[in-house]
Image (spheres, rainbow, N blue to C red):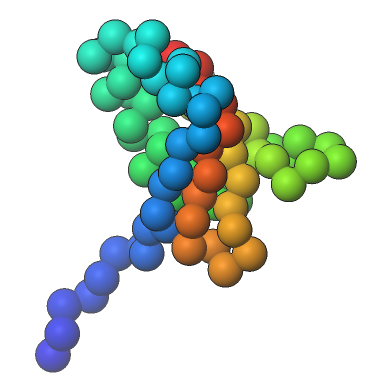
Length: 85
C-alpha cells in the first residue's frame, strides 16, 4: 500500500510589490510569513475575497502577517501580490 499524502500545494510566485516588501523583513518576520504562504498554497480558500477582483486577503492575527494573493484557474499556482509582517 502507498502512504497517504497530505494536501497538494500549489507553486508560489511573488510579484514585484511582494518581493519589495519581502526584502524589508527581518529573519523572524520572514519565518512567520513563510508559514502563512504555505497555508494559502495548500488552501487557496483562506482569507476573504477582495470585492471586484480575483484577489484574496489573508490575515494571520496570531503570527501578525498579511498576504494578498490570487490563484490560477487550475489552482496549480498561487501568485502573491503583497505581503506584510
